[in-house]
Amino acid sequence: MKYVILMHSNPRPWGHPTSNFLPEYQSLPAGERERLGADFDALLQDLSERGELVGSQALGDPRDARLFRWEGGRRKVTDGPYAETVEHFAGFFLIDVADQARAEEVAARFSGPGETVELRPLAG
Image 1 (cartoon, rainbow, N blue to C red):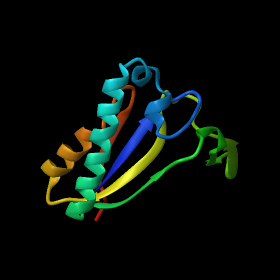
Image 2: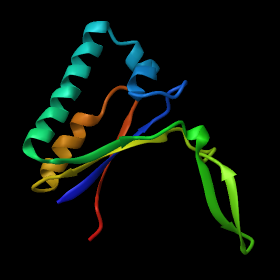
Image 3: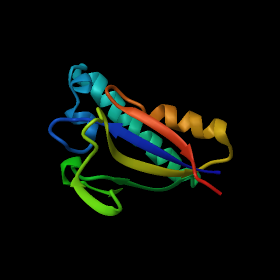
């Protein structure tokens, strides 16, 4: 079963890994930040060795986004992201796992201080 793990974040300034730019992460002791980084690297290694990591990609600064809408019978292009959002889509990981329980186990390990992780199955 394929799932996408969507990473949401709102660092200022924008940068990757986004956690390095979040106050919640920056306030942790150096040893804790190092442990979290090592845990994340181990997770990616484990997913790769199991053949569960299909792909991933970080996204650029949301200030460079463009929104395409249909308004008043015409297309309208505006600068993005949505102004009303608190978090921005920072990147994604595509995984292929045995079942939803495994997908939830993996997604839980992606979450970190100041970030939101969304797990969504692919359609079809």
